[in-house]
Amino acid sequence: MKGSRILGTGAYMPSNVMSNKAIEALVDTSDEWIRERTGIVERRISQGETTSDLATKAAIEALKDSNVTAKEIDLIIVATVSADSIIPSAACKVQKNIGADNAMAFDINAACSGFIFALDMANNYIAAGRATKALVIGAEVLSKITDWKDRNTCVLFGDGAGAVVLSEDKEKHINYVNCRSVGEKWESLTCEGSPLNNPYVDCGDIHDGKLKMNGKDIYKFAVKTMDEEFNRILNESKLKKENIDFILPHQANMRMLESFSKKVEIPLDRFIINLQHVGNTSGASIPVALDEANKAGILSSGSNLLIIGFGGGLTYGSTLLKWNK
Ligand code: ACO
Image (cartoon, rainbow, N blue to C red; front, side, top):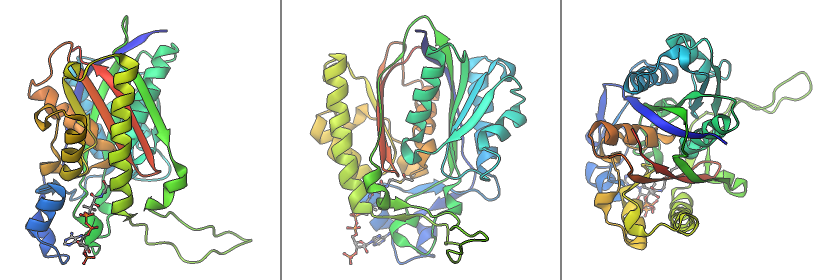
């Protein structure tokens, strides 16, 4: 079985910054409420760029950071819930945009856990000898499926994209991966597509196509699963807490991360957190934060990075990554 390693990272965020104050003009909320309950100060909102545009720019950055050409890429996976279209996939558009003619390209949907699921898939393709260099991308234009009249959700989300180049390697740098789904709880977070409408049945009007969320359910689910995943990884890896250099969580809510930090007794300064400035970018959240940490020079060779996420589905996942770049 071949191992794999992240060679480089990239990210791209739309330039338009939307502050909490700007949201005050849309719904009955306040900057103070949003900061206190979520930690979010601002987010980036697309003014025309599509999910595949953002994904393409993040991919180009990741290729540059990795010193890899698009022609060397043989697998492209985009984790997204907000692709430009049902057909084609965002991944196929990225393939065309960057000229990665030798790649297999497809999207996956595991909501906010999507990047972890995609990384696991790419890692397994490489381990099986089916790919040698993969672009794993998380990209979202959530603003198009956000209900801008619903204060329970519109304050949370943002747009953006992050990417990594994962290459085959003599050693395994991605370990103890766990990707799980709890379909029983699917109703906690939904965004309906088109209803069945064909010559035999007419199930009515097209739904509004906007995100609907039971925030409390997801909050409880997230705190419970993050704690369980943390303990699972410690048990399986036999690592001590002190040996986890950084925790890179899905960027959903600061209060959630504070309570997780207390529970596992790892101070917040060992967490990689950027939600204050980008909000919850779903599938993009982890690779965007990873790119920020990489570019800020926070990670050093040999750092143990625990990546952990949860999201719609419901889904969750985690992995222990040995940084070696
Ligand atoms: N501004 C002002 N008041 C608000 C707002 C707002 N934006 N939103 C809700 N409120 C009100 C509510 O109506 C409620 O008022 P009431 O007491 O009069 O009924 C009060 O504030 C408290 O509401 P709660 O829902 O209890 O607020 P809570 O502290 O639970 O925070 C939040 C809500 C931020 C949504 C939290 O539950 C959360 O973060 N949940 C997790 C969401 C998440 O992480 N989703 C990730 C998955 S997303 C994906 O996969 C794409």
